[in-house]
Each structure stands twice: as structure tokens, then as C-alpha cells.
Image 1 (cartoon, rainbow, N blue to C red):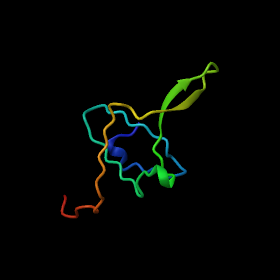
Image 2: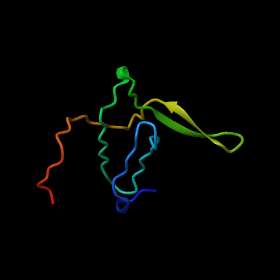
Image 3: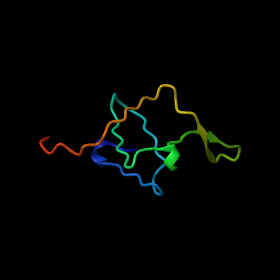
Length: 84
């Protein structure tokens, strides 16, 4: 479980890159992707559903993007150094 005290969370293409966001309170997630997802360039975003198998192991099954998921793409222009 991540909390604000943990600081920034980093995922890399081949390490720690299966992640899930579950909000305990109303919030906004800022996910900076560089380079951005691009299925034609081989950088797909895949959504999964966790399934429990008969032997109690867990399996991740790819599913369509959730219908209530909303995303906005904007150009990244860097960090505003005037913020406190």
C-alpha cells in the first residue's frame, strides 16, 4: 500500500510495471509516461482482471479498458519551479 509519505512511485518498462490504483479518498493520479503509450510502436497499455485459480494461485487476464476509466493526454512541459 502506497501513501503520500512513501513519495513518488516509479515503474520501469521491465521492472515493477504491473500496478493498480485504488483510491481511498477522492484524488487525481498523475501518470507521466515518457515516451507515451503507442500501440503501433509496441508501447501498449493493457488492463487486467485478477482471477483466482482452483489451486488458489492468481492469474491476470487481459480485459478491455474499464468503461468508467478516463484519461487526458497533454504535452509535458516540465515542472513549474515557482511552486512551493
